Length: 92
Image (cartoon, rainbow, N blue to C red; front, side, top):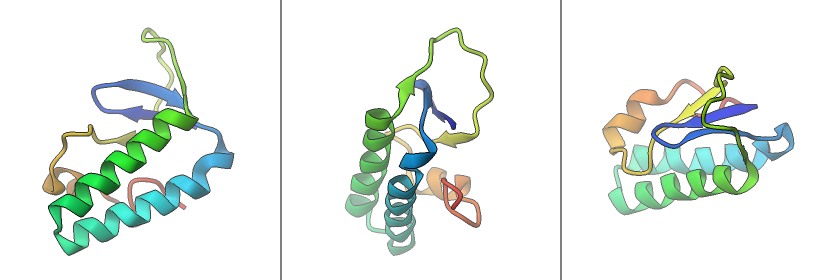
């Protein structure tokens, strides 16, 4: 699955890693619902760090379509909330 982190580029993430990413996405959704900035920031950074860890970076000139688009690490609660779908940032 091709994932784009806004402002960073694309990574190829194995479908085998989606369960862990979904649990991190759930934590991010909970943090947004609570409105707790510290919890939100920690959850967002945790999700992005894990995607970077398990994903294989694609070349900068790659033109692969992104299946998922994740916000940048400095995104606000409101910005990320606007990106959420019915299933969070990462569909189940």
